[in-house]
Image 1 (tube, rainbow, N blue to C red):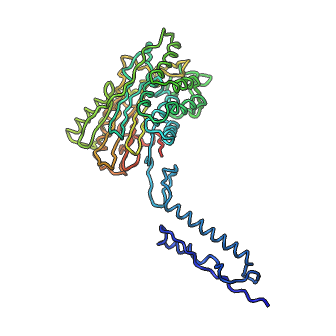
Image 2 (image 1 turned 90 degrees about the vertical axis):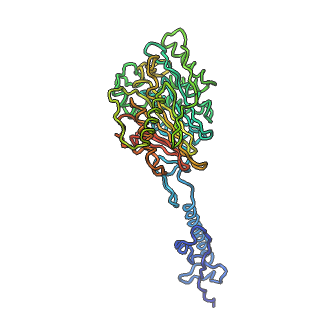
Image 3 (image 1 turned 60 degrees about the vertical axis):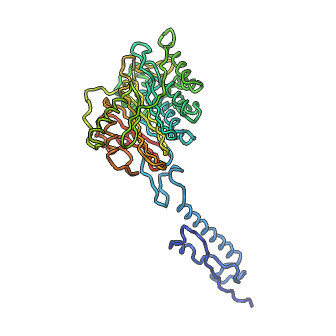
Length: 490
C-alpha cells in the first residue's frame, strides 16, 4: 500500500528591495507562494487537490517567474528615467513632473510646427542652440514665404553660456538689387552665424529644408491666411491653383527651384559663396549685367546695459536695439521694475511683416532670430530661377526698426543659471512691447513656476512675443498669445 501523500508546504519568498521594503505592498507580494522543493511530497499520487510531481515543479517555476517580473516592473517604475529623456509627458512615480514648455536639455519655439520639430531633431543629433535655430530658420524660409525667406533680412542675438558673452548678427544695411527689390541677405548671414558658433556640419542643417522644398510641405493656417488676403499676381503658379485662386490650408506645395538653391548652398564652403551663387541666378532672372555687391553680414559684440538685477544685451543700429535700451534705462531709473499695464501702441503705424524664433538650452545658451521681407510676401516678385520671393527692403527702408531681440542675464551664483530671452514680431512698437515684458519679468518673484510671460493675449496689442529662459537646470519656452507658436524640446 502506497504511503499517503503529505501536504504541499509553502515557504515565504524573501526579496530585498531597498525602495519598497517599508511598504505594505511588499508584504502582499512576498506571501507564501513558492512550493518548498526540499520537503517531501508525493511525486506520483493523484489524489484530488494534488498535482503530479513534475507539474508541481512547473507551476512553482512559473509562479516564481511571475513574481520576479512583477517586482522588476515595480522597481523600474519607482526609479525610472525622467520623462524628458524618453519623450514622454508622464511623470515618474517620484512625482517629478514638468509643465508644458519646460525641458531638461533644450527647446525651440517658432511659428511653424514643422520647423520646431526640425530644430528639436538637430538638438537630439548633438547640435547646439545655433544649429537648431539656423536649421529652423532655413525651414521657415521654405514653409512661410509670406513672412521670411532667403530674400529676407536677418537680425540675431546669441548668448554663449560658456563665455558669458553675447554676439549680435546683422545683415548689414538694406541694399537695392533692382528698383523695388531688396538684395537677399539671409544665406550669407545664417551661414556666417553657423560657421562661428554651430557644432553640426553645415550641410546637415539643410537636409530637412531641402526635403521639404523638394518633396513638398502642407500650407498651414498662417500661410493660408496671408494668401487669402493677398493679390496672387506674381505668386503663381507656386502658391496658386491652376485657376489662379490662392492655395488653402492642407494643400501640398513643392518648390524644386528653391530646393536646388538650398542644395548648392549646402555645398558652399564659405558664407560669401553661399550668397554669391544665389545673386548670380537672380541677376540672370532680372537681366542684370552682373550680380550686385552682396551685403556682408557682420558678427559684433552685442550692446550692453548693466542693471541692478544683471546685464541686458541687444542688437546695435540700425536695429531698434539702442531705442530699447534707452527705454529700459529710463524706466528703471525713474521707478524701478513695474508690472504696470502695457502702454498704448502706435496704432497708426504700419506693422512690418516679420518672423521670429528662439532656442535655449538648460545651460543658459540662447539664440534669438528675427527676419523680415518688410511686407507680406515682400515685393510679391517670385524669382523663376530660384523659387525665392524677394523683399521690398531697399536702400531707403528703415530696415531694422522691427528688430530688437533682448537677452537678460541675471545675477546668480556659480551653481545657478538665470538667463531670459525675448523677441517680438508683428508690432510697430517692438521696443515698447519688449520694455513692458522685461519690466513685468523683473517685478515678480523669480521661482521655477513663474518662468514665462504673465500677460494676457491682449495685454500688448498686436504682434507675437516669444520668451525663452534657462533656470533651475531646465530650458523654458512660452509665447504671448499663449499657444500661438509651436514648441519642441527634450
